[in-house]
Length: 336
Ligand SMILES: Cc1cc2ncn([C@H]3O[C@H](COP(=O)(O)O)[C@@H](O)[C@H]3O)c2cc1C
Ligand SMILES: O=C(O)c1cccnc1
Image 1 (cartoon, rainbow, N blue to C red):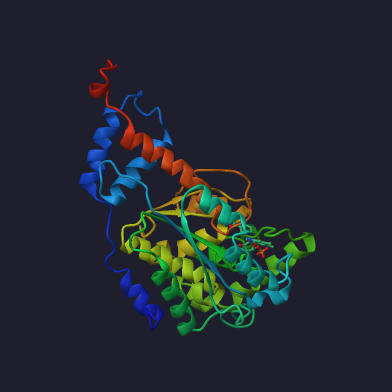
Image 2: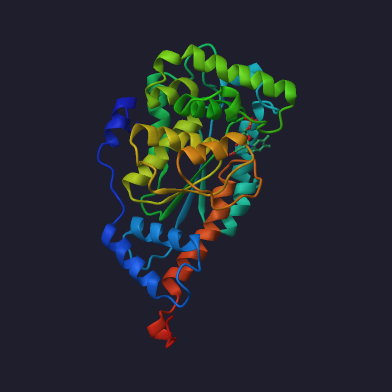
């Protein structure tokens, strides 16, 4: 275990690297000379400059994207907050391992190396309406698993998840970090009916009330209300930052896990962009709170890293244009 305690994880965030300002400036200068009207590639230009800054290269390439899928089970599923039974988590892990899930196809499409990391599926987290979801050491273990899973040679990271019930902890975390009516952070997840939605709102409100005293500390939010796969995503996104590996965030669950870092250290998500906005209504709100505009809006509500994986294609396009285009001088084209 890399971190024995959550405090050791927090200490690892004390000296995070920043984007390389000279490389970014060189990329901006190059962008200004490319054979297109200024700004004509819109947000692709911002995306390429962001990537160049984090990779420390004026003309970067994207060669080694990594997708990590973490899985965990949730005690709170006993309260009837998902349309599917908890057994589906392990069944889907087998499906990921056999190559049959949506994320397997997208990883292959975009040339990403994907791995699956089930975390103690036989030991669901505590039901957060009754107790903290995790002990200190369980949180430290999950953060460590995420941290250790990142390949230092990767040049892009995506974290996905599988965990029946996990839109409930994601909503509870978002509500604890950003406030507002708990009901405004919930959604139908895998397809809850109206009665299920009402149960879910009550469960989130109950969890917030039970753990209220602890919720001023973002790591306590993650420990009391989160889950193993969420904490592993938090750990992996932090590790990517420590290695200056850019991150594409996925849906609501991934973004809630990431938001914990931003609350711990403002700016800790500067190396991350939002791949898409999911159908889960809390996601758009959370992205707004993080000041991140999604690259795609495709009405996905799947998780696994799928929305982020699709956004690899957008990033590949941005980088290909930025690094491959001719300048006006090279092409002998008259400027405006
Ligand atoms: C077959 C299947 C595959 C999935 N892949 C991702 N999820 C997604 O649905 C779950 C969250 O929704 P809720 O909170 O409503 O349970 C997570 O496991 C998430 O990754 C799936 C769900 C199912 C049923
Ligand atoms: O936004 C997500 O990632 C999401 C939404 C619903 C179900 N699973 C995941």
